[in-house]
Length: 491
Ligand code: LFR
Image (cartoon, rainbow, N blue to C red; front, side, top):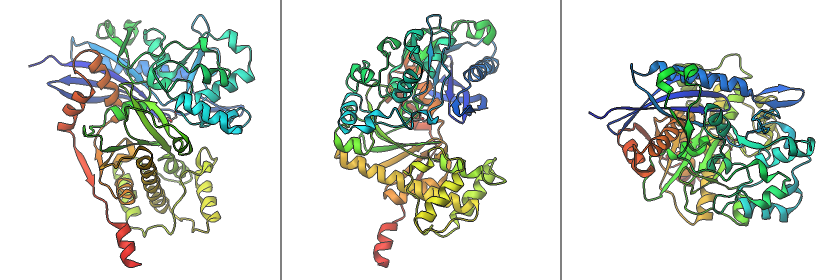
């Protein structure tokens, strides 16, 4: 009987964070969520910020809970941190935070510094250099705004670390920029793994703030202050740079078929739709489709677009007196939504009005009224409209990728919160005309733990991990209902 290996995944999301304890034994991974906490950005004086000290507090609480959940005498072999992309801290030479960590939805980049937007050739040049389109929340634009607003920062700051890099460092790891999270910034070169001098110069971001990104799987050192975290259980715990970007973790966790025929959706606050490719997708078509060539845990490419995601539904719920909490509540809501007739027309989920509205319900209503469509009366009808619209958005994005990459996908694999939403899965299958396979899988945490297992030498590589994982995994297949041909016959 093999000795189990225990590892912790710190998985930070924009609306909640978790610490998960993983147990690896006999090629099987078991997870226990030892700590979960809400997360939200906080607004003050017209700007939105993350509570970095609060997040650090929660990470420590989670690690203490992980230590407490270990069997007597067992040790935590390693820990890794992942989070949403683009957000970062600036540190002075002594490692102190010297600028508030803005949240990516803050409006500071919306006007003024969107320089490439003003100049098409700049836009194409920066895209060719970084493979990342110009999206308002990119770290490039955020840092450009910081430097423009506070020119003194150039000298005062010594390092820019993305959030997982920073928490790895607080845990005791060396201060390093990890590749996947660096690839969300629009400052990393699309070829190789060096920062793009062209992008840094264009955005006036000092190159000295960054070091050459390390690959996921790099051992950054040993946890410090183990006494305050979990005593002996954490005394030799390694801090491992897992894919710092949660989307890279979620994609790593997909038990994809080795033939490359799978299209991926990581469905949560955002729907992150894309696929794995040895090469980036570049050129005018990819730029127009806003393809982000982010990096995978193996350092390859994940051409992807962000479809707005369940942020729409989360937002709408704030305008209703009661919202589902338990899985029974959710089931009731989805059943009610399924029972409704199909909406008269769908939302264009790419409308920027949905990015950060004061009221999502008002934004949706205005969008519908402008298109001459009826406004829903109850939460179930909004749920139906949102799921059908997202399904359509997923399918359209997939078709665009097929056109650009010259390939046909055979299945759509979905992980994340939305994979539990059967209305969304079915709507996606129907719109795409492909089976959607939903996995009962904590995608980001599993991808985070997988990279630790590979780094510790317990698993050979990602393909091997996916094969082990796929064997025991519960999956639900949503076959497409042939809507298109039904409509054709009716016509
Ligand atoms: C998802 C995600 C997306 C990124 C967005 C903003 O959590 O990481 O991949 O585009 O957050 O950083």
